[in-house]
Amino acid sequence: MIMDFGGRALDMGRCHVMGILNVTPDSFSDGGRFNRPDIALMHAREMVAQGAAFVDVGGESTRPGAAPVSLQVELDRVCPVVELIARELDVVVSVDTSTPEVMIETAKLGAGLINDVRALGRDGAVEAAVASGLPVCLMHMQGQPTDMQDRPQYQSVMREVSAFLMDRVRVVEAAGLPAEKILLDPGFGFGKTLEHNLQLLAVLDRLKVLGYPLFVGASRKSMLGQITGRDVNERLPAGLAVATIAALKGASILRVHDVWETVDAVKVVSAMEGVGQ
Ligand SMILES: Cn1cnc2c(O)nc(N)nc21
Image 1 (tube, protein in one colour):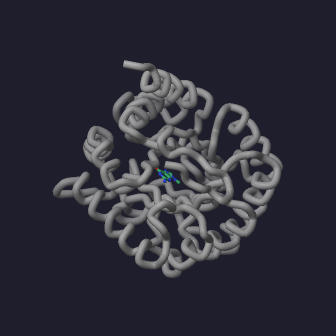
Image 2: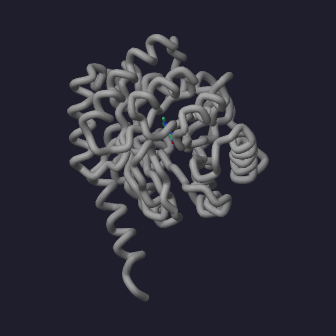
Image 3: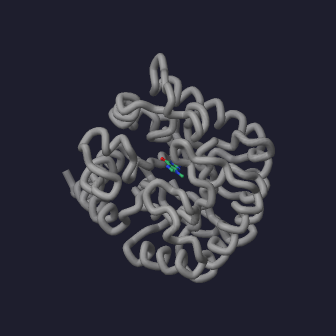
């Protein structure tokens, strides 16, 4: 299934790697390293050279406990970087935002995907996403980053995550966003215990039957630390294991910090899937 990302067509039947580019001072893994547009461009260039098909630009940290940022701060952080990368590099610029004005502005500057961890939940976000004409990733989150990890609870995490995502699909499609512009994401680490995250990973293929490309992000997250005991910058092997599992289960986009390593892991899965029986 070919999806058009602001003019760049990509086959969602294949698994693509998205490099993370946080332009925030407080992101959990690389906060403050890429705050200047020229430095952000250098990092984006490096990730594209390593095989990233997408770069995800986020101006408001979504890690547990993160404080919201003002509209102007988010615009000032994100717009210059989106404009520079969209102009200089052959890559789909994804914008990690829940803010309607940021969606509209960055679409004008060349963004190719809206990645909203709040599934267009903020006032005006659905209308802005439809107006942008861009594809949108709808992600599940229980609660908000400030409190989502306090007491996550579900009767059945897969059933409730699927129901939430399908409800959001109904809302955005009714508002005019075509089905072929929607991706879905279970939201690893967003209001989930380790057990919830593992249950979602185990049955990720069930989310696939909803008929939309799957987006998965677990890179360096605490779920990997809980399993391995590793600190945030020693979680690459565990992250590659999740990437491999997700690729095998049909994910179309993997959002990671470590691009070439993940590209190689996906190449192994694709090579195996491509060989004749
Ligand atoms: C911004 N961000 C952080 N983690 C993420 C995840 O797992 N999915 C998506 N879509 N975005 C994420």
